[in-house]
Image (cartoon, rainbow, N blue to C red; front, top):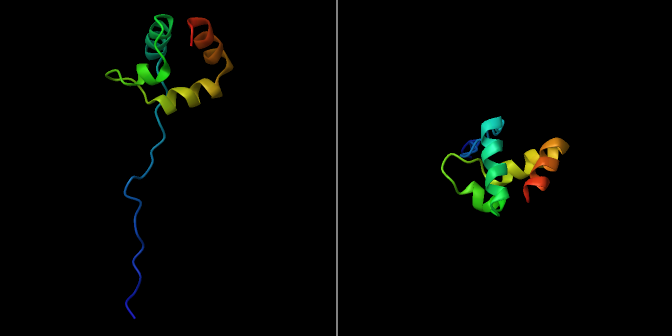
Length: 71
């Protein structure tokens, strides 16, 4: 019987880097203009929608600022 090979995870997940304050300012600015996180996430250099949402859930201060921006 042949030995079983362990399969490697092809998409080894690396944690997302923190979102910089400059990027958050851009996100808040776009939210003030009426854009949603999904829309903002499609911009060049923007973090994924999932990453932004997880960051907002983890930080009450960011979530409050986003809500005030219109998010």
